Image (tube, rainbow, N blue to C red; front, side):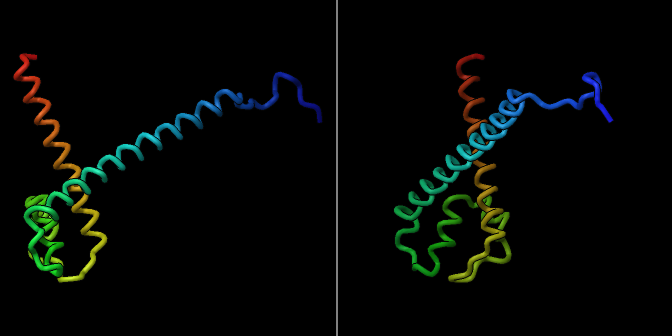
Length: 122
């Protein structure tokens, strides 16, 4: 059985494969950078709470103070009615809380940008 040139299966070009690979890697790196910036913002806010309003709290109850200090709204949304016990770690609710903080921060930044644009008369 002989295959003629016109019925030869198509092979993707190397340039196309490289372009697809670079697009995937670039997208992953962009997402990673955004999440590390968000994480850094959370750390800064937490440190401000540790050094400020929560500095005098008992170590067993300080985590609750830190959560409330960063965001009353997110605390109520995630932990209301079932607060953490001293020393308790709940990874699922912790992730929900962090997602809430990120969403809240994004909404706040969008509102600030809109207000700034309005002041400029745009």
